[in-house]
Structure formats: C-alpha cells, structure tokens
Length: 119
Ligand code: SF4
Ligand code: SF4
Image (cartoon, rainbow, N blue to C red; front, side):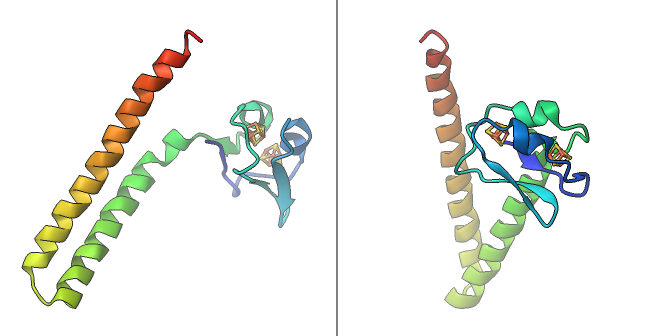
C-alpha cells in the first residue's frame, strides 16, 4: 500500500494528475492518498520526482514497535484493572495468540494469492 512521506512532498501535483483512480488530493499543500479509492496500481510511486510515495515494507520496523508498545499497554491495563500481576502474563499470551492468528491469515492468504497467478 502506498503512503506519502509528506516531509519530502513539494505538492507539485504530478501524482494527482497521473492517478487513474482520482485517489490523491492535496491537503495543506501535501499529497494525501484516499486508501478507500486507491487501486494499488503503483503509478504514483513511479512518477513522483521526489520519491515521496513510499511502500508499506518501509514501515515494518515502525509497525513492530507499535505492536510491542500496544502489548505493553494492554499488559499494564490488565494488571491495573484486574488487580493481579499474573494477569499481565495472561494478557501477553492473548496478544501472542492474536499475532499468531494474524500470521496464519497472512500465510494462508499468500498461498491463495499464488493460485491467482494462473488465472
Ligand atoms: S508527485 Fe510527489 S512531490 Fe509531487 S505532489 Fe505527489 S507526492 Fe508530492
Ligand atoms: S497506487 Fe495508483 S490508485 Fe493508488 S494512489 Fe497511487 S496512482 Fe492512485
């Protein structure tokens, strides 16, 4: 999924003109992608002279840090609201289950997507 590195965007409007889905607009003079409209064609990434349209893969570390931070917050909240330090460990295990199921969904989805190559 594309995202805009707004610090680099000059607001030139090239991506807006080239987007076939009309998914990009200027907000505060920076490109802004409406993901509900975006068809994931990648054209904006190719035409941006500033290299400001970036790929999802560049946010992997950031997303991992967010997930760890969120898990720690839930662990603290479980201990606080349930009044038992053991609840922290139970919470951690629930979050591990959650991310394991996300992993399973991603792996199985990728398998299904491979089948589409022959369609
Ligand atoms: S083409 Fe690049 S620099 Fe120009 S508006 Fe789009 S994202 Fe910003
Ligand atoms: S990926 Fe394609 S549809 Fe999505 S914002 Fe970029 S140019 Fe538009």
